[in-house]
Length: 248
Ligand SMILES: Nc1nc2c(ncn2[C@@H]2O[C@H](COP(=O)(O)OP(=O)(O)OP(=O)(O)O)[C@@H](O)[C@H]2O)c(=O)[nH]1
View 1 (cartoon, rainbow, N blue to C red):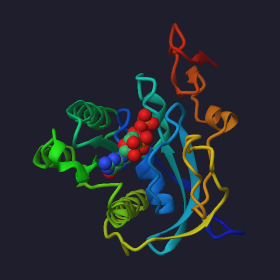
View 2: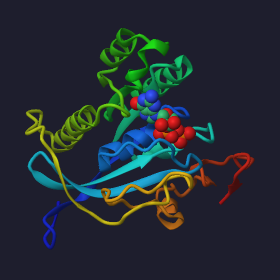
View 3: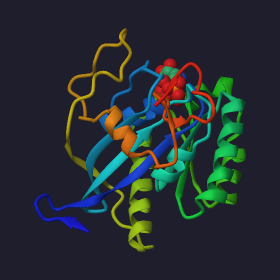
């Protein structure tokens, strides 16, 4: 389906970036969208980036949800919202890998048709390695997922290549086109600069790829009718709010 005014495919590719705290989800997302590596980010809220990318030769709306790991609750909202998942762990953190394994297994069971990319981040810290590459590669093979080990901090090119190719596959899968297309993607438009995702102590990057932050109204639109979400962590609140947050 196309929007005649913009010639942009109107139904966005929705990608959720998930993983435990401090594995580099925000760094990875912002690195991909802006080419910049920024050391510290706010970690108490989810960020939704809306942009238009050139995917496989055509402009394509893409929404990337950088999830916050502040509140360890069910991933249900993301399971329902996204059609593709980037599961991030740190090669220096075995627990983060265990959580990635659990997430990938859950995706296999509940979203079998979703595209999954597993990223082992922080490969520049090989001397602190706790997760062997072969482990994660085997996990990916077992679940028909993509896998890459990389350093968001050191290699912008790797981040771009891996996610570009992933988006191309997501789009191809949606279109039922198994042949894929050009791996070279180019960002062609953006909507708004986002400086607020960066911690107060960090200077804003300028210029940067323009992004949109997920505001409360937009966040609520992602909510299924029967699901109450904890605000701001955007995970379901059951009998109690997700401490220390307040249910909406
Ligand atoms: N050495 C190294 N550090 C990294 C890399 N990527 C991210 N970091 C650092 O890891 C820390 C956590 O990065 P974030 O992007 O905030 O991690 P996150 O997964 O979004 O964390 P939450 O918001 O808590 O869920 C920061 O200090 C980053 O600078 C990397 O490739 N190498």
